[in-house]
Image (tube, rainbow, N blue to C red; front, side):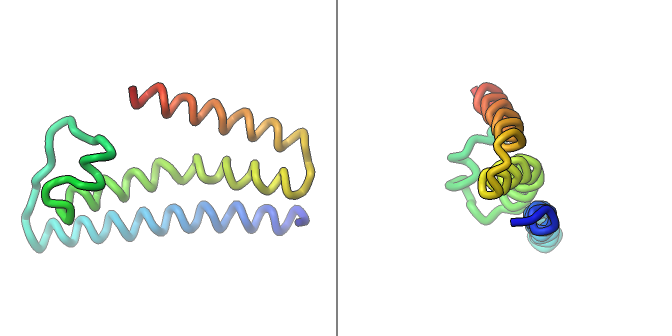
Length: 113
C-alpha cells in the first residue's frame, strides 16, 4: 500500500461516515416532518434506548443514530489510519496512531460511565 492508496483509503472512510450520517439525519428529519413524532426520553441516550427504544422507528432514534455516526467518524478515521500503517509496516506512525486510538477509546469508555 503506497501513500496515495493510504490517503484514498482514509478519505473513503471519512466520506462514507459523513454520507451515512447525513442520510440518517435527513431520513430522521423527513420522518419527523411526516409523522410529527417527537418522542424522546429526556436524558436517556443509552445503547438499550437506541436499539430497543419504544417505538424503535421514531425520528428521535434515527436522528440520534445519525449524530452518533457523525461523532464516530473521526474515531473510525484514526482506526483506519492505524490499520493502514500496520499494513504498510510503518511502525512509528502505527504506534502513534494506535496510542491516539487508545486514548480516544479510554475517553469514550470513561465518558459513558
